[in-house]
Length: 334
Image 1 (cartoon, one colour):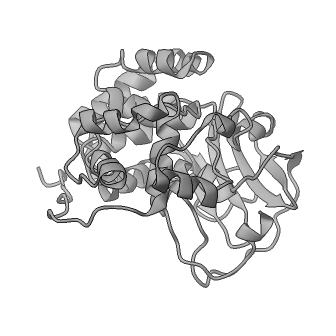
Image 2 (cartoon, rainbow, N blue to C red):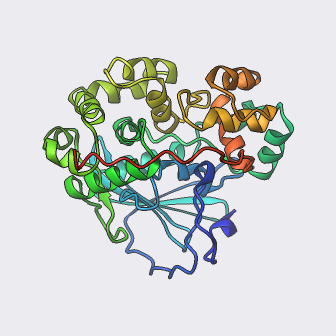
Image 3 (cartoon, helix red, strand yellow):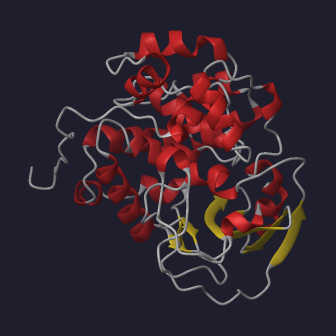
């Protein structure tokens, strides 16, 4: 598995949450040692597949995948900001961490890499799913243990193109976050604290292209940040119910959040513009499937519907686009 991340020219890919390194990138020197922890998984593990869903676009200031095989994350933990570098060699995962949150990040390293996930609970029911399952044995569902970190970018992705959402996340984190601790790659930042999110002026949301509805949802969420983070002690369904008590957070956003924070294997995303058509096309040849049909097709995977959807996305079997792309909006001139 270490060879999958060995330095080599590849194309950048984010389909289905997979991350590979950029074409022709120059390797960085090894960083100075931080706190170190190792973990040996009990089966195949592909870091790109496991950690890829945590990246919010190619310019995400909190995430970086480098050609030396390392994956870097900058996080705001309960103990403070921290930077984590994750590598895998010879079947062993190694974490190095810096900053006040270093110990917390290293304690959470196994669960981040899928230690609490149980792939054996999954049984493929369709040929395309079985084939992808066989070809991607290193897929595990990681668990960050951080709710707000996944919730805020998910709110930014509501009802807009990914280009708009990624741009907003990038601009707001760089402007109101803080530089990642330790020898992190250039331009990496830890996202703002709940208090700092609450203090962002209205014109800065506007400048980042975030409409009042999404900004207000984030402001309501950060005011009860401690209560939302308590949802980490709840099962995914109960955590989603707590998140959805905040006006502006619905099933789409809560699913996208707990998929990352809890590693929720059954939290299938409903209300998505593209996913029902992709699932419908892959499993039944129906590009016009809606949420109801998608849930019917995924019903044989009850308890594992999110994993099944991930495998379908990774299969590459996507219907050809026939409608024009959703236009990129711009509220800055309003």
